[in-house]
Length: 188
Image (cartoon, rainbow, N blue to C red):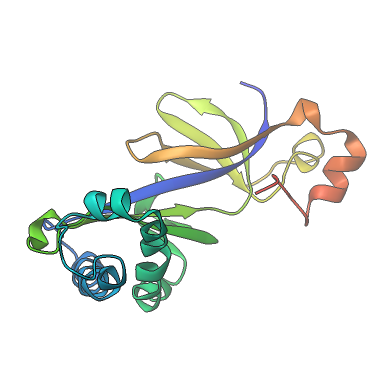
């Protein structure tokens, strides 16, 4: 596999089966905020589910954004550690961005409430694949690996993990690699 600059995304789904304190707090707070915010789009309470509300009022698409504010403190408490995602030595991977999404909800049934938080890492250098593991290095190491060894770590391929952005080393000239060390941009 060719070397590349990537960003990983990990999608954490939280529902009524929440196990950790973080998941339970996000579940409860996002549901309570959903009940509050959905009233603006469902004044007569003629709809029960998020899907029904969105079909009747396209402006309800902003509920993801509005409800997402309510869980911001809980996400900040993670100190940029992606819950449930570690390297092969059980060290957490760090995120630099996240996106909150309401997958489903029902104003009359809390058990139907389901949300997702997608965490995105900073730039990583993909050095290869070893079995079920991505061989990675933090930051942009494309120039360094030709001159000296770089520190690496392994992340197991798994459900909910994806490569969000990919830039092949072949597509980056030598000058661009040097300039990109502190300024990696994928157009996101």
